[in-house]
Length: 156
Image (cartoon, rainbow, N blue to C red; front, side, top):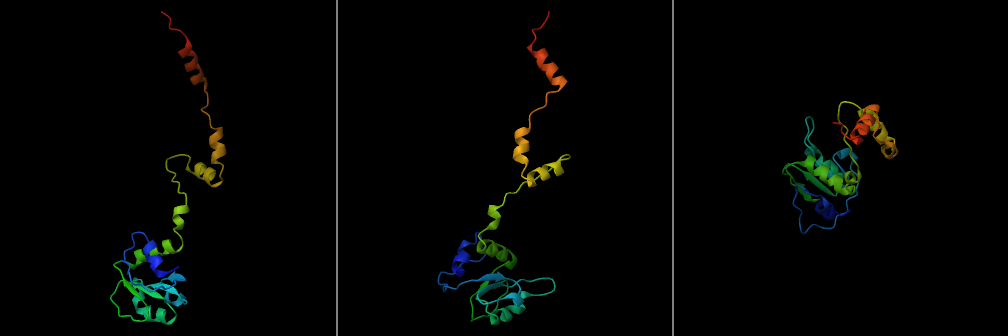
């Protein structure tokens, strides 16, 4: 995927794309400089113990095609994009690169006091359509008596 396409397909992407971006093919995305292979986009993350910005040169030496980070750095070999939140940028980029897989998921929330386990088991076993088709309001003796009384004419 071209870097320009990746940046423009990333909805609400926190980096403004450049108009004169050369056609750079991106073969993958990583935030771990040890995993960079030729053509990868390297995203430098700042963590509690390590700062990914310290590994930008290592990533470039291993073949990173472009770099995204939060700090001001001087890089001339590959395009560098500065953003206010590289973790957020990584999330948007990964979603765009892999074709927004979460859009293909169905999410069902089950809440309440009783019946959650049974409901989840029915949903995951794909038995819910069968179970729903067989559900009918049970006629109890009370509801049958009520229906019979309702049909009787009032007596005076």
